[in-house]
Length: 275
Image 1 (spheres, one colour):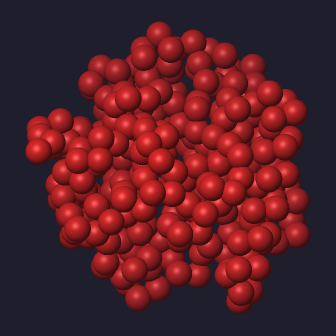
Image 2 (tube, rainbow, N blue to C red):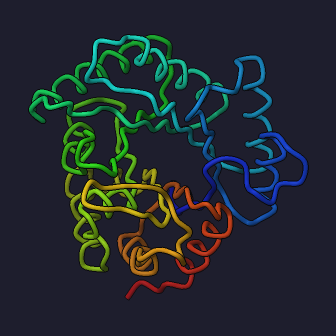
């Protein structure tokens, strides 16, 4: 992608009627460009319905991403949690989504370097399975909002360098909460994006999957999402940094005010001028 598309985590709140297809059409009507399929509690699309989702998204020119179920921990022996990612990847790919994100693991008092190796091993096995199925969806471990969770920016960028078909999902609200209030200035946003570009090149900067919202946090990290204007997050400075780095891909609003904040960020981003 050569532009940054803004969208909603699930069906926009203003959607008339109900259902995913109506939500995709509403995204287009709102002037947004993306929607994230939310499988966070359950995978709620069947293989039979997926082609209609894909057809609708293509007709409306809405790019789809997907969020796999929350209850995943690759630092465990529970193989059904790996199966949830693979099932999500299959359904999302059939819907035409280009990217699947998930929270990968918890440290559980295991040394971070050992957790990293375990996560990498599990993801590489998943990629092997998907490649055998000719499924080229990007797997996107997400930066996480608590220090107890695997998923620092450094860990995910390293994994993206060392594993095929893997790229980061960068949640800026999580990075802010994970460090108890840091990562919230133009200088810090520039530093984060410079690290992404250094690690992954222009491909990484033009193939972004981003999450954004306001966030309530404490010493242990993330508590819950907030509307941007009710939070301390300096989203205007983030939009400026993204414009400076010629960011492209998809930015998904996870705010309680889904499309309101997606449009707020889109409008501010488009007003920025690269010096």
